Image (tube, rainbow, N blue to C red; front, side, top):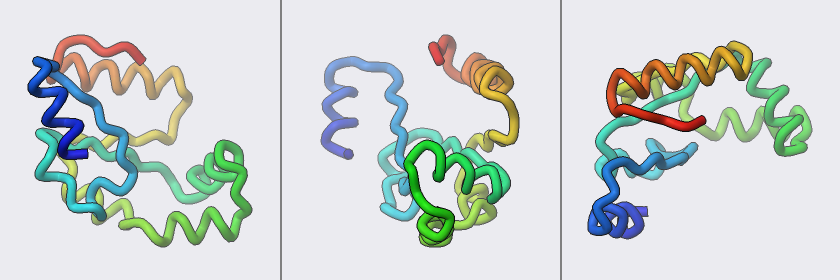
Amino acid sequence: VKAQLEEERRRGVDVVVLEAPLLLEAGWTSFVDEVWVTVAPEPMVLRRLKKKVGLSEQESLARIRSQLPSEERIKHADVVIDTDCSLEELRARVGELWQEGSGSLII
């Protein structure tokens, strides 16, 4: 990850968005300028994992519990995004946050 980010900087890329669910656990925060964390109620996360990844409820719970809890991730965040909303609302929220800091974002 570090080498890839350095290559993008050498190429003159101004902004790189890194989707890294285990960013904090892997100790990669020193490679990035900002940490954006998403949070949602556990039942919603379970539904999403079951639907998107096809995991059983037990597998979904095991995956959730193997990661840092939201409260701990929030402590390290520059931006916290509550995803307990429709996709349209989420796009609007992220767009607003992006405009505040960086300029333009296509989502």
